[in-house]
Length: 243
Ligand SMILES: Cc1cc2nc3c(=O)[nH]c(=O)nc-3n(C[C@H](O)[C@H](O)[C@H](O)COP(=O)(O)O)c2cc1C
Image (cartoon, rainbow, N blue to C red):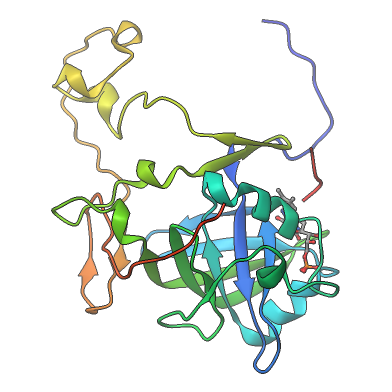
């Protein structure tokens, strides 16, 4: 394969594009679309978002010290993009996109009711990196849409129809190719692309990075495949950008 060597740039894709809601007391809440976001620690559960200081949301995040990461579903894609090209300085984004501000459990800013998963976060550190400030945050709790839970309370996130962001494009998720550890699993049915699995006899000693989820009942759930349902949402929601 022939490769071209390009100058340094952000090429880590696909990634999520999330809708981060935030608010200062007594002011209208805002939503900023963020693609520079990711999990950074399992225990305690932590994530980061990187936000340019010139964004209207920046001072809200800094002063309030909290935010909600709202995952983007197919139906929310347009709103996600719009919140990423319009500023809260000029618009009430909740109102303009017909999104419902929803009271959260642990933080005082609202989440987006129409989002399948709301991750409530408390800022622990702000690191100036250059163009962006990195907001390191601890996850206080996760609000999961109940209709995506099975009868045993396990979360089937595929039902949420989440959207990926790749090099300026919003993409739906495709076919399932395997599950965590399938490459070394004994049961071949865990794999759909058996052709590239030479059938090596290997014992799966690896562990899936756990989804630590604290539910409303305060129980810490560890080493599980799923989160837990907290509420019922009602809602009908429905190139290239330098993040
Ligand atoms: C897909 C997408 C991803 C984005 N990612 C980021 C990001 O990671 N960090 C950032 O500061 N701005 C990012 N932006 C730009 C902001 O969302 C945009 O400037 C927004 O208008 C800021 O809103 P505000 O002024 O209300 O805070 C992104 C925009 C889009 C469309």
